[in-house]
Amino acid sequence: QKLLESLEPMTDEDLLDAADLQITPVFFDYLLGFREFKTLLEELDIADEDQVDMFDTLDCNDSGTIDLEEMIVGISRLRGEARRADIVGVGLIARSIQAELRELRAFVKEAMVQSYRVARAAPRSTKVS
Image 1 (cartoon, rainbow, N blue to C red):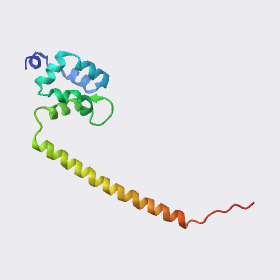
Image 2 (cartoon, rainbow, N blue to C red; image 1 turned 90 degrees about the vertical axis):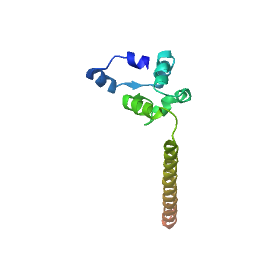
Image 3 (cartoon, rainbow, N blue to C red; image 1 turned 180 degrees about the vertical axis):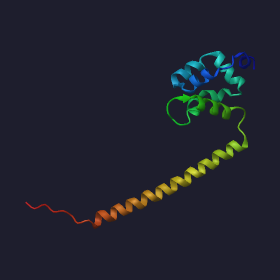
Image 4 (tube, helix red, strand yellow; image 1 turned 180 degrees about the horizontal axis):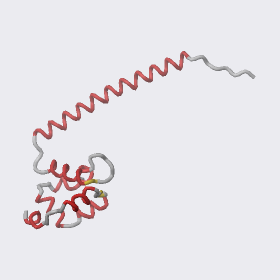
């Protein structure tokens, strides 16, 4: 709490500059090397085990960088212990993805069958020498 309280408030200009900030994996690892950064994460109630792969967790759009919004939203979701709702939510998302994959598999299978039928029905070209 002391570290959070010691930070100076940001001006509107600071916030606009921070909105364009992109953190790379290398820079994030560099930040994790600072005790002050790790203390800040601890004060934000981010468990040590969540800090290990935190960059990948925060990079929700898989862009290879973390922007300010990803950082804020991600850290707010990492705070505290996992709740039953979190676990249920992951299960629901997994089921939804599985259903979409089943639909995609059926679509691809049907497309392959149709392509095969079209290919069989097409007249074969013969070479005349």
